[in-house]
Amino acid sequence: MVVCAPFVRWDIIRHACGDSARAGVYYLETAQGEKVVCVNAILDEGNHMTYKPFDSFLNEYRALLPSIRVLEWNFRFQLAAWLDGIVYYLFLQHSGEGAYAGVGSCWHLTYVSRPGVAQCLPPGLWRFFRTDGSATWVLLTHGYTIWPVEVINQQFRDGWGKFCEVHKLKPEFKIMPILQQITAGLHQN
Figure (cartoon, rainbow, N blue to C red):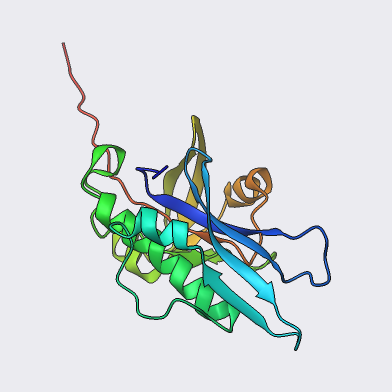
């Protein structure tokens, strides 16, 4: 079954039989929580990890995937770059449709900061926020819940900690802020 929505993140399901904590199956997940397995992480006899996409995934999603030549990786960072590329490419592909209409190039991928370190906005969004020390409030949405978060000098401030706590965000996670400007019309009678 081909999922017709952009993937928002990827992760691993570790093998329970566990000779290695690194072996497992990687999946891509949609905003609706659908998981699509895509890559097998295999530990060989020499204790070397190999990452190989499932043929079924490549066949079902070939039309949606960015063109690639390498279909096997020996390092996790190579796999991570490929999976990040899929998330990025599919957001670009869907940026003119439905809920993603008007997003265009106003979204960017970035890692979550370590605890105690201010979370900076991705550089691509800086032009939309002031740098004079004044506050701008943004609304972060996830599902049907909205969190107001203060932005000062391109850094998330008040409200960001609660957002991270609720979503159990960790430094190895990536977030994808999407900027949508909503203009409300005021009508006077």
